[in-house]
Image (cartoon, rainbow, N blue to C red; front, side, top):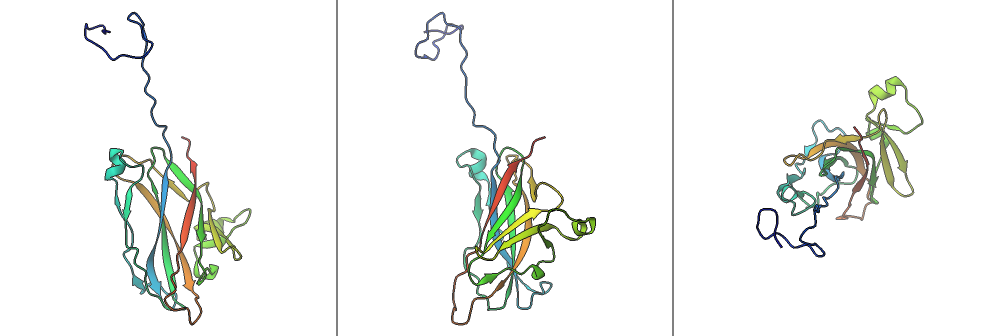
Length: 212
């Protein structure tokens, strides 16, 4: 079995010597792949974060294996050690999205699940407004996002006010992950006698494709 150069070629089952054919390589489709990380940035005893204790718990992102194709996600290295807080303390969380995919994309909604002992009060979050069907220009200029709070299921839903998305992120370029973030403030409300209780706060994002 020879090719046109007189050299032995690659055998394909069912191929005859005089066949004229094309080989097709199926590539993985482009995709959106947003990763979400949530971490504590500050803790305040009175809700004033100007002089609050700051924590450097943002993940260090390693894209080595993502770039080589060995993995489909980057590696996020950050502290998992719990932080000790007092009842009544205010915790400022940063929710950060990273686009690991080969397409530009956006998050249209963030869902935050609060454990028992961690409370959300809209009054502590001046950048959020209760979700409604429409907003005035003044509200659009004053607030960053809208929220819905289900006190029974302890779920906060954060949505955009004046656009289709919360985060719009460029595709991964093989070097750096595009990223954006928002902040949310919660209060420690664990009752007396619940010392050393671990509170795990989890957030998810809903993603959509950006068509250009």
